[in-house]
Length: 414
Image (tube, rainbow, N blue to C red):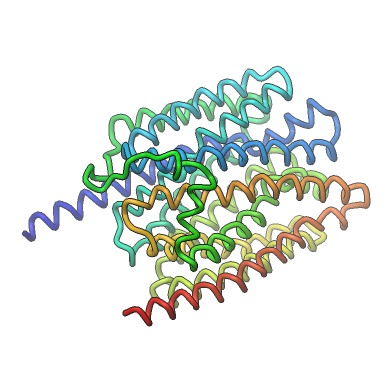
């Protein structure tokens, strides 16, 4: 019996290692294009303000496809297992980056972003995979490790993208395609399946659509409030994807290399928080308090980013903002405890659908805010960051109240 337990423990550790490597490769591929995509759009349209609006639209297209595809992909992984879904998504991403590298105009670039939204929906499966191989009490730490893996990929990706951008705005797309291809081959030969056949759930279109997936949230009252926190968190976060690169260039004169290195620094900080702090703070203070603290710290940091007048102070504001990374893993852990093992993929699909709604609305909103504030000068350009900070404050208040009520109900039932 002891030998069997040790074997299972080793299998779980190796499975977690495999999924973290796959996550790093995926995020590296996505991060490489971040410093150059807004500038490629700006080349097509010839205007910084208009590029901000269109970049927001492109992010919204990506998120809109995630909204539609995530429940389907999550439910498919509940029936067929996590491994095949991750493999197909990696192969699809590789093909999509080739398409964007060859895009002759904005329309083809938009098609590429739409397809990227579908293929990158495998992130729902990665989170479900982690739920498969970790105990409920260890999931905050597990999701923290995924967050750290994403951050590590985000360290390497934008920095590499900024360097490659000197050779042309399309070069990073070719490298991103290669990394997604490596992720596919890695998974093909190394990644084990995490969901046993006896724990799988038959695919159903009733569940595998955004509305059907959210019915799962409705069945558990506490999940509705936590899903709303998830929405607010992602809504605020998309201020980065919508205007960060353009804002840094407009206010501080930073190009792809500087922005890429700055995003790499953000990734290092986030990796330290999610890989080192989440597990410890969750064990000591609990998931609820850790989540609320992370949201408040993020609000302070992002408000400072819009307020500060110099590049050095902008970089310093990244440090309190990095504590925002405490919120997502603990929020995910709170939610996964309230559904069965066979519903983890559906839950992650529902979560991603909620996040995708934010991903559609937020970039359009912040892109619009940025486009109308830029003509009023550098100080006014930070308004989008102030709004994002207020959104996080609302998330912190709602999250604290909802999680407290859920904990009281859980104690009353035991």
